[in-house]
Every structure is written in structure tokens, then in C-alpha cells.
Length: 112
Length: 114
Image (cartoon, rainbow over all chains, first blue to last red; front, side):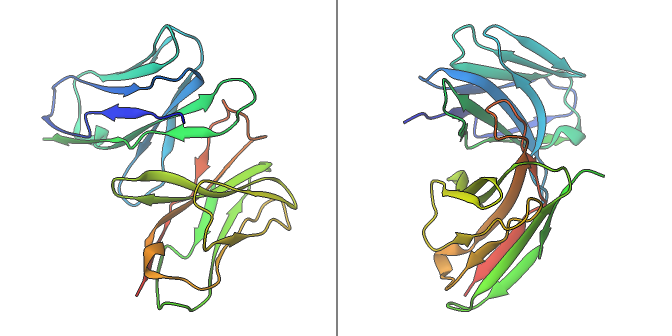
């Protein structure tokens, strides 16, 4: 069974701090998607990474896919209150498996 | 505007009273799915549909039914709701169900079964 573990589960920081959240597995994924979910809303896609070692940047957010495609990280520079939310990672199966495997999420609170 | 629309946003009902949660998407997506989200358990897929008249069970299908008579609509039916189905439900759609195709989620339906 493929599993995705996200850490930390909860994170509360002050505005302006940097942070990194992790998404780890013992399984290989063909791709890794990161979503952000705000209270009262559905998850919204931030980025998809597909190549081992790939790094993508979205303003102050930097996403990296591990070389072996088993893990990923999300780094936020100078966090702002608007970054508050639940960050979810979802892995796409290798081969013909089309199902997404979801992590439980990292709940981030950025305090002014 | 491209979107997935769920209704209702909030629903309180009693055990055994049949209910339907509607979902509609305007992006001509082939693939639609239903998830429930519970604290400590994350997002779990209930049912999915790869196209009209093609549906299949996800990870937690017990107590739920779906239908896909039209491409844009994918209602979730609870024939006899029970308290353990109290949850936050999301409908999602994407193109062709590909492993790299991003999911577009609705804004959720918070269901309470007493």
C-alpha cells in the first residue's frame, strides 16, 4: 500500500519566518502535486512536479521533488498571514496506476 | 469562470432520511470523483467516474451511491444516512483522469447526520 507522510502535522509561526514542510514515502511516484486548502474551501492546486530532482518556484514558495521521486518538500520564504492554510501533497502512481495517494496535510498558521 | 459547483454547502439531517448532494462542472472534464475529509484521516475517495455511465468504487464506498448520466453532473446519494457519514464532502473533476492532471475541487458540503 502506498502511503504519503507529511510533516510537521501542525506549524504555527510568525510573519516573516521561513519554513519547510515535507512529504515522504517509501514508494516511487510518477508525479507529486501540492494543494493548499483554506477554511471553508476546497483544495486548490499549487504545483505539479514530475521529474526527479525538479525544483519549481511560485513566488515565495519553492517545491522540490526528490531524486528518487519518493519525497517532496515545500519551502516558504518570509511567510505571510495569507499563507495560512492546510497544505496537502498527493502522489500519482507509477505505471498504469492513475489513483492519487493523499497525505494528511500540514496545517500552517502564520501570525501577524 | 471554470468551476465545480456543489450544493448544498451545509446539510443537517436525521438517520435514515435519503439525501442527494449535487455536483456540476463546466470544464467538460471526463473524470469526476467524490471525497470525504475527516480529521486525522485526510481526504478519502468515495467513488469516481471516468466518463458518462462509467463509475467505480473508491476507498470508502459503503453507504453511498453515485450516477453519471451527463458529463457535467455527478450527484452523490446517501440512501440511508448514518451518523458515521457526518463529514465534509468534496466533489472534484479533472481531464481524462491522468495521474498528472490537476484536480479541481468544489467548495465542499458539510453534512451532519443526527
